[in-house]
Image 1 (cartoon, rainbow, N blue to C red):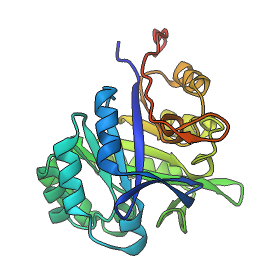
Image 2: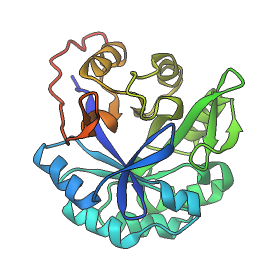
Image 3: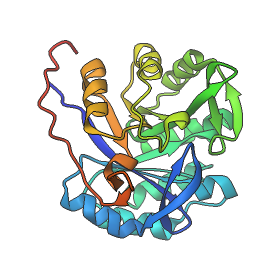
Length: 252
């Protein structure tokens, strides 16, 4: 029986790791390489790196930083941010990054998505769906949550599968940094309509939040930012990791 994957997620702004609330108001956390080393020591299942500055400023990916992360990490790495071409994706993949994540490119250029699939393989291509409520409906946004795309989420999932993506990362913008728990209704919507691996992100503030969602959805990926970075009511920065969940997954 597969166990759930428990995954730290780091947001990069320039050369720094930051933490946001609803993808806004970034707080400096530290140096990316130092934090990757800490998660190496804690034997994390894998790690997600999202460069929000590359997306916001429409810059090329920071290849030097990406290569340094790939060299430093002993975990599988998923990287997203600023990827607009198959050539960029292949360069990142060849640097040692196992998963290439795109977001806005999926909605802008399907031909380029097909090229990336051919370049790196479908198993290594991930889509990050940034979702928040808009006019009382779950809706997909791009550009770090600033640009509305659609609220036809089920149709998007079908198209993602048709284009042979290897995984979906569900990023709940409304829950980002709140430490109030996953939105299990949103997870259920994606989970019940997707045939490919799923990782969920946004909202974990304590172990019980993970346990609750794991008991509902079993062996998918559970990504956390604040939970592994902040401790205590004053949110002191203290890197931690926990993947010891002795639960019963027989129903999944």
